Image (cartoon, rainbow, N blue to C red; front, side, top):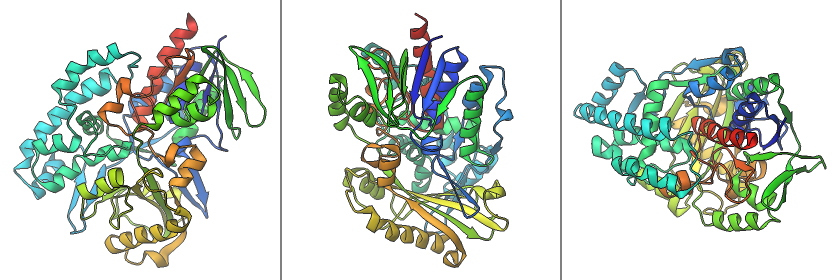
Length: 493
């Protein structure tokens, strides 16, 4: 039996592990932290359960497929709840927009802003459906290993004006400023700036419209636990709390791994779900390939980081939906501050997660769990002292929520803490504290992204946000499918 190792037990790494183990490849996953999940980590404090990162599950079919590979049902391990509305967008002037896939309700919401934009929205939906078919269905799980594969995709990219930004494309269909924001913010969920991310990312709208938006009962961490259960059920091995320190190589082959504890083993193939800069700079730093790729990656544009405030409060809030987007007085200006200028602005664009409105068991009875997430510049653009700034910024965010949603929030807080860019750098080895790996722009997509199989070390592979197709749960699960196809074929030769 061939043996494979996967560095990192994030969702992408676990999805790859399930596929390899299902194909009869003895697979071991080595995770540095005390729990699996990667960015989908979890904390339990004072009776509250706090998901660390991704909470929006779309395209549940791509997850269910991981169980069907061995004749199992995802429902054995994971219960998914549909979320409606998908998101409630809220502006400082009190305007609200409930975004869902209910046709009548959505038309009503658009008409509240601008009735003339209903027809334009339909044209945008047609465009989104077209790029979804080309970009996700046909190419999402297809590895781009050579430039020829990129050339073949050029006609499709040109036909859909992929050089334009999502915001630019949305603006060509609808005229109301708030509706333009409502239809373009989605790229922020995968680390992309709506003003610069390729219009191909408009496929997210169709992905959500067809597959819905879901939440795992017990939190995203229960999806991770379910994936681990499926992996171990079919014979996979998971090692926790032991960081990999070196990918061992000989010539153009990876031969095995060595961890901090001194454990080592030989493998026929190695895949990394770790941060791609960490993989090349730190785990392959003694190799020519590692040094060259480190230099190349240093010239890339990296996604921003995040500042997340987790808080558990007294009381229940049925009027606050599961997902809210609290927009500020600026949109374009704020995005430029985050992505270009490296400014920590006074205003925000917040994603508010309120899971207890769907699953009350995530907090003590009569209490609620929340987190508020703000995109912020990464450490390369904003090298400030977050130990000093973190508590100040947390209070600013709570002030905003107090003004707009929960007037007496301070008196209700039972527990709170924040997670800042240095935490991403320390806990996840994320280069510059990035939250989504490479920024998803056209010149860093498909073939221009880290390849699913290394060009020089022929049995070294990559999975997760740093490789094709990119970040987000559907993205990393699709990357696992692409990488698994390569590994299974190569290991059977």
